[in-house]
Length: 330
Image 1 (cartoon, rainbow, N blue to C red):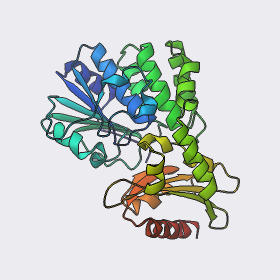
Image 2 (spheres, rainbow, N blue to C red):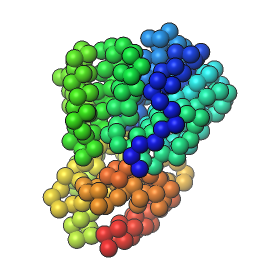
Image 3 (cartoon, helix red, strand yellow):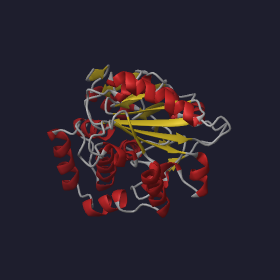
């Protein structure tokens, strides 16, 4: 599956111009693509003179507070009702990942729009545009704004650059295309401060993250005849360094970078009495579809990058995933 759509960019542009009020949101535990796409699209709608609410179930990650307009991101409160005629979900493969509080807050919306690049997208919403060939939802947002002839301000361009850069591994992943680089050039021409954005994105980590990296390097395991590198993060260690949810973002790439490793796996015990396990998988080769592996556990994502949430305890979750990977290699 490459491209699915039940509307055109021109129809979406008409919806944007005709809508009375909007809310834009992405998946919980948001990354750079989720927040960057939320802000870019929301700011573009504001430039049309539309009232816009910017939402996220988990609020704004501290590591993305440098993005223009980031102060507009709201964390919905329990019992809150938000007046928005049109809700636009970005970078979210299934409705539940938008979060129960956010969904309840937007229960009175008339129209739901689903813009995404995950091939596992369930097609929820009244209108959707899903292009799994796009390496980032930010790329879809850029193409949409260009087709709608909406102004590309430096603020919007900065958010789109971070969205695309983070979801392409700084333009390294296999899904990156010539069009992706052409968009990056257009964003630079639009007036972004490239050096500052890259420094804020990749060179401004808190010390906690370095502690996590040290823990990863000291505890990682190499299994499956050298083809799988994995790391387990217990809640006790996370709490001992006062870890924030975004601190571990991207650390799995250190595992994937090991010579001979084909699949990297990260297991993280989440807060809460049920101690759910957050699974992240990354693959170096389309021959090893980690999206299909995660789908076995109720998750999904991409062929080369996917995730799921499993029941614990941690050791049991690891055993189940390792068995599924064994079967994939067989």
